[in-house]
Image 1 (spheres, rainbow, N blue to C red):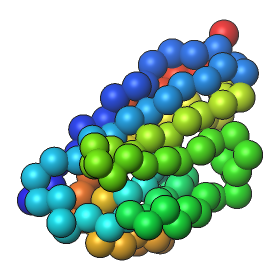
Image 2: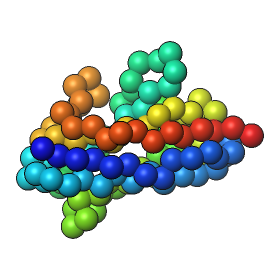
Image 3: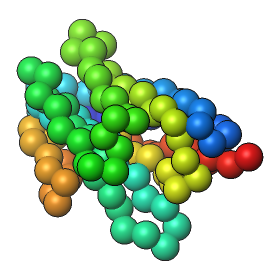
Image 4: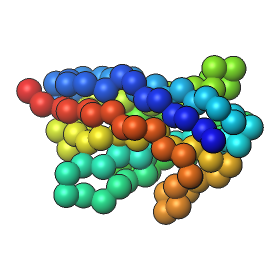
Length: 120
């Protein structure tokens, strides 16, 4: 089993920044890819970004240039730096991990989610 714990969500004004963290524990050897998804009320879950243990990165188009995913393998932690936040970024953000994950097929392990609210 793998446990994922997110932190860093909150309330921010439009144009502001937040940094989310996701720490993995348990059977870490099961994890290669770590990623972030989000879900807003009434919307489907949306893939945001993925990073592998070797540092290969991909983003969905809507966050390219604003969000940056990174990873500290020594700490088994992935980060999502979010800049120039917009009200439409308001959602619950989830960390995801597995040997592999794609925008269409997430990995098996999920964090509990952290709320991000962008509002003036």
